[in-house]
Length: 295
Image 1 (cartoon, rainbow, N blue to C red):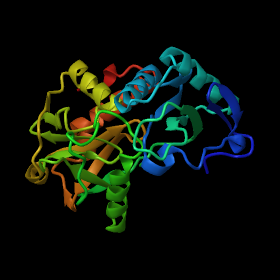
Image 2: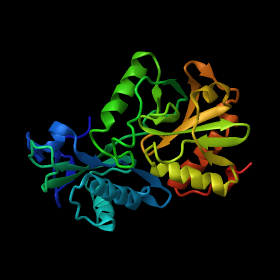
Image 3: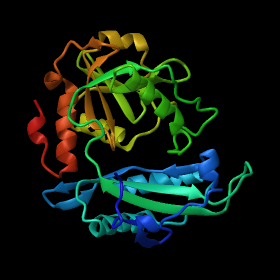
């Protein structure tokens, strides 16, 4: 699904065949989940194949490693160029790239000085496709910031996200919403959450959520289009009276929500603020003008 015998990836400064890549079975990442990663999208635009916010993603990868105490010596601009080369070597345009920093062998509960960098890529469309999502509130919560580096994109952290998604799927939903340790609505397993009420968008503040790059882009789009947006805690009871809602993330893109816990919204998606943001975001990643979406 992700690679063939001809697929090329980047490993520790070299381009190699994916089938020739190996990981030490005593890797600390494999045993304890100590590692960092990113997700980057490429698009076939009017101006050629373009990576969206690649530099920002590599800078965040560097920051994640710093928070975990893992050495990371790569330059973000150089890695951006490596990513473009990787797309070319694999003949990909609309694709997903996965930079991963993983540790060498270490069975002790201390950071290891040996780390490796892998960047893989594969053809991958939007995570949820184009459909509107049926979402449920999960029984699995996001970690307490006092116990976890919630601003870092850490490999082991995603266990709770996998559990939340699997639970939602088993109940017949497309995705989940996770609450924070205070019981407020935080985010989805693979993206940030925005709620619309009375002409205003609301999203959880930084501190208890992952600071998504796409979330930041959405906030900038709202400012450019004069869409009111507030960052504040969202009580789960507010979901019942919301006008609309959507998820956003690198893999998710902008995904409209049809219902939460089987409760549908008052507004049709096409009439929502989220639909405007979705179109503006799409125009931005494809390097098209989005001025026409202002209504």
